[in-house]
Image 1 (cartoon, rainbow, N blue to C red):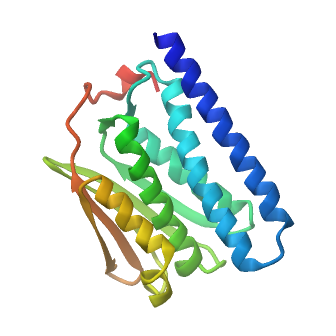
Image 2 (cartoon, rainbow, N blue to C red):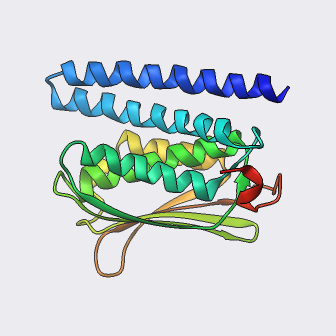
Length: 209
C-alpha cells in the first residue's frame, strides 16, 4: 500500500511539473505583460501543489507533512523565481511545527502563494525588498503572516483576483484574512484559521524530512 501511494505521489508531482513547464514555455512566448503575468501566477500555484507531492514523496509517512518544513521550502521556491528575473528579495521564515494532511496543506500553500505574489507585484514592484513569513500555532487557532516592506496595499489588489483567491483558500481552512499596515511601513497579510487536529506526532524527525 505504501509503495502504491508513493508511486501515486511521484506521478502526480511529475505531471504537475510537466504542466508548469508547459506554462513556462507559453509565458516566454507571450508579449502582452498582463497575459505573461497571469500565466506566471498560474504556474506558481501549480508549482506549489507539485511541491506538496514532492514533500509527501520524500517523507517516511506518505500521508502527512510538517507545515514548518513545507512552508520554508515554498517561500524559498517563490523567492528563487524572482531571483531568476534579476529581482533580489531577501526572506526570513519563522514557523512552528504542525503535521497536516494534503487537504489542509493545499489551501495553506495556495494562500501563501497569493500573499507572496502580491508582495512581489505591488510592494517590491520589480525593485526587490524584504519578506518575512511567520507561522504560529496558538492552541485552537493558527496564524500565517506575510510581511513586506513596500508602500502598502493598493486598491487594485483589494479588488483583484489574488485577494478573492486568498479569501476562498481561507474559507477552506475555516479562517479569515486581514490586510493591515505593518509597523514602520509595509503590509502584513494575515491568515487566522482553525488549527487542524494533530494527525501524527509533531516531531519532524518522525517524517524523515
